[in-house]
Image (cartoon, rainbow, N blue to C red; front, side, top):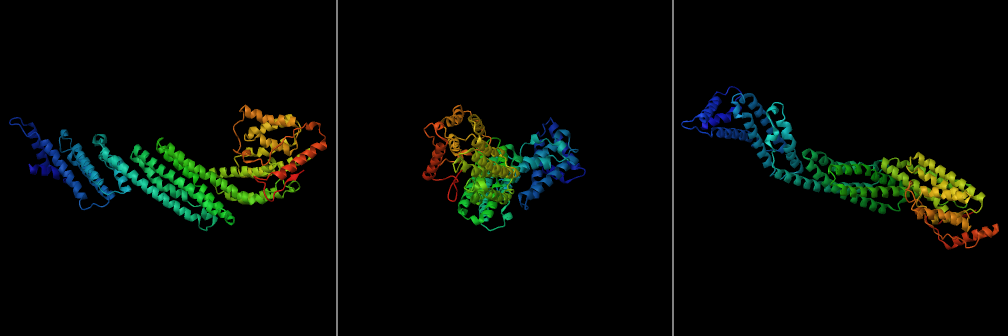
Length: 568
């Protein structure tokens, strides 16, 4: 009997005629068909065992003493399996009767042998690449590179074979891989952040400050994110959630690092330009980071909503902080000119506005280095802050216009400078074009004489700027010297009616415009019938009231040392 099974085991090596194999097949058939006395009914099972032994030995011969790396072993396994199954198809299938299903028997034996080899590999001390290699072999490589080969694929049904690894083994490997990746990603993200922080403190050319930090950070996670779904959808979800968790924690630390760096650099005004480029480098990371976080959340199939919200929250805070910082740095250079707005000599010369325009031209060139989203946010914030510099002294009563001629002159000057600034921000492609309506609206309230027209203009102003409040309007009426209690009440009543009816429309401009203008004095209505007072008396009371406010109230929100109060 041993000689018979030895023939079976050697048959894979013989590519020609199989005379002895034919004799073995005849013996098996004879034994199965013999009745008296009954033949050995286990001959077919013994033949299957002989096939299995021959397959096991061939795999062992190709792996024994040549352990090497998993990929090198896998290449040898693929080669021998494809060669042997091709030989079975070309030389052995025709030698056996159909009912022996010889190709299926050999295929099953190789499948079992590969399964044992792969399962044994899982017992090693594996790195992430090795674990992924095993998972990939189980899910993709085996079917693609062996079972789907055109030489043998017509005779193969992969679904009948089943997976190489058990579900428990596969789950164990997936969890092990996710755990190792999470540790590695967290460590590498921390290292990359430290390297970037070191760069912030180095003296570099401005162009060199625009680093590829975001690309390096994303590349730490991207290979894992890209290939995990190729194993299975569930594995892709697990890994996406793990990386998104690491990324969310990293973005939180990134935000805190930026704030610390800003506090360390605060006051070093001679480094303004370099600091601007550092801030640009930081905020330019936000759009690709946001896109990558969104992609990981999509791969997580809804399970990463909370983590995505945390990541986007950190990115929003970074963008807001950076755009506000850029605005403050530019406003610092503008301050010597902006404090002259509505000052004693402002009405008769353009030095203040010309200075602001010059600084904007110099400083905003660097902002073009920003990517689209942060650029729009930065320009929007700068647009808002510059117009606040123009509007704040008016609302806070830095100037007083008690004659229609003076009001028209002041209004014309404000419109001219507002238009000039608006043209600059139009060239800068500011998305907040509606901000340019604030000065025309205010100047209309300043020059109109008809109460009904003023009421209509107030309503339109509130429509565009819902944070415009009674205290702002009352102060503006003080500036124009409107003391008649009846007229004031009618005009102020427009805001009362809108607020009471909850009729304020959604804000179409930058949020928080007038809410950033504090009123540093109490607006007063004189409790007498001014309509009966002489024109001389009204002017005297107006001037007296204004002088009293200047004496009793400190200036703030843009009114400080070096600013000039004007009474016209």
